[in-house]
Image (cartoon, rainbow, N blue to C red):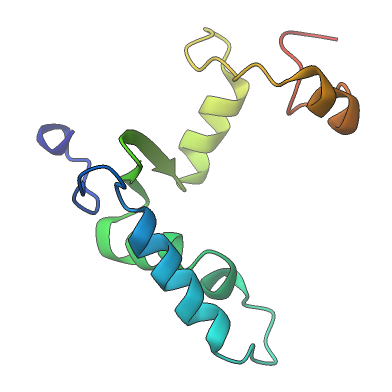
Length: 111
């Protein structure tokens, strides 16, 4: 991916970036929440940090699985519209479908 210009934190054997993410979350939660409505650095400190460090789109590791993080609004729009079916949705278990209903997150195609 680095040859394609996609950067990100380096892979760590077995746990990927999970330990870094947990450490950043623990540190962020230890700080008091300010009076502003800017809670993003507290809720997702790893995304906030790595977006500033690697750019709007980067690669992180969840254990041995790579995850592409997209924060560029134009790319998000393209992925969510997905007219060519290039980005399949993960099939959710039936009990999750009952909780979430038949909405954007769980349905495929037009309704």
